[in-house]
Structures are given as structure tokens and as C-alpha cells.
Length: 340
Image (cartoon, rainbow, N blue to C red):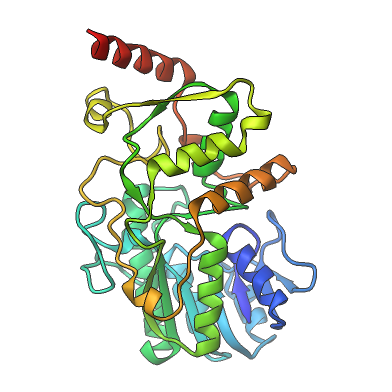
């Protein structure tokens, strides 16, 4: 197995799991950040450099390539076209953001996608949430053009949580609960369905071993966990290390919107839309997807952080979380309005 981008988050766990399964794993990355399993072969290079890609191809062949990091269509296209000659199959890790209707309507594998250009290079590598979905679709098209449907497996995960997460969603909530005091919390009963990175990896490797192809959504089944479950789990696992106990102040979602709270980032993973967690995973469940309780994901992430774990530095980390003064002001305002 060749893994492109096997040192940050999803790719890193895939590498660890694959090595533990006894697979022969090669990791191709720049070596600038992250870490890889000591038993994996590491080849250094930049996938944006065609000479590096050609040099990589000479190290093949491989049974399967896993692209867990590609998000620029032109870059993914170049690597897919070169590696298609030295690899039997390709697994591309895409995203729920590929769906045009998300988060405003439920989605399944047949839902409409954004238009995607397989040869596009936007020039910038800065994170752009509005461009992310169309870019990932362009990457999917590029992979299909190079490998064809018979040699391609595409996974479209929802939000992925767990150790090594560099986006900062769950780590922020754990840190916030550790600080304690009154915590601004959205409606506790909204169903959520993030997937543990270990479960995503396990499903990916299972499908590789089964020779699967096509497209699978990957998330926890809908209706099983709630936003409140996640926040209470965060408060529980940090309780022994908390500065003071956390008091969750449950606030109506419409009220938060009216106050101008930025959805999805100021209160990470909260969005007041029709179907932010409306991803069908029936196809994946029917072919072996199993997901652990969200509380296990929260605990594993906290144990990693408390043990000195550090995510790869990324610009998206800083955009998550609400300022303490603004949070406190909102709580005072909400409680005053409710008592009045």
C-alpha cells in the first residue's frame, strides 16, 4: 500500500492500522510535519513536483494507493495519472462537502454534487470553506479519469474526529470544558453523526481487502448520538483536570443565530440548518461499517492530548472557538431574557 499524506490525521491512522494488519506500507510526504509509523517505509517528496512523482512511481508497483490528503484537482490529477501505471487501485478520501445540498437537505451517494474541474489549480493553498466542496469533486473526477470506475474507491466521510485531529473542533471543546464555569451550549437534542478516525480507517482497509469500488458515505448512523451527548462526554472526561466544574447553559439555536454567533466555528460542530447531520450511511453499514460510541472518541482524544499529543499546526485550528468575553456576555443576555 502506498499512502499519500500519511503523517497528519486520517492518513496517519490508516498507516498505523495497515502496518498492524501486516500490510507493507509506503508513505510519501514532504517530511515537514506530522509523523509516520516506524515500520512504514518513508519516501520524501512533494506531490506538486512532477519529478518527485516520477521518482516515486519508479519505486512501485503497489496493489493500492490511498490518497488521504489531496484537495487541489490539478495536483491530484497529476499524481493519479502517474501512479495509475504502477498501482492496481486507488482509494480517494473525499468529503460530505462534495454534495451540493449539504447541509440543507439529507444526502446519500446519489445526491447531486458540485461541479468540479479535474484540472483546476486555484493558485492558493489557503483554506476556503466555500471552495472546498467543488475542489474535492474536481479531485474525484481526476481520480476517476486516471483509474476508471473499476479501479477506484471513493469515501465521503462526514466530520472525522479523534486523535491527531488538526482542525481543532473536538480539542477546542475539551479545552473549553477543562476551563469550566458556565459554558454556552446549543440545543442538546440535535442529532449528530461524526465518525471516529479509527472507524473510518478500519472501514477503508476492510473495503481495500474486499476489493470494493464505487462510492461510500462514512459517518455514524443518524439518530444515535446528540450534540448534548458530545458536550456532556467532554465535560466528564476532563472533570479531574478541570479548573472548575463545567455548567452547561443550554441555549435555543434560533436565539444563537439571532445574536450573530458564527455557525460551525464559534461553537464547533453546531449548525442551525435543516440537515447538517443528514448523511445516509446505509450502503456503508450494509458492507461492514461499524462505529463506536461518541464517548469513546472523546475519551481517546482527551487521553492523547493529556498525554502530550499535539496536532499538526494548521490555519483552520485558530478559527474554532468563541471568545470568552463574548461567550460570557451571551450567557448573561440569554439568562436575563429568560428570567424577564
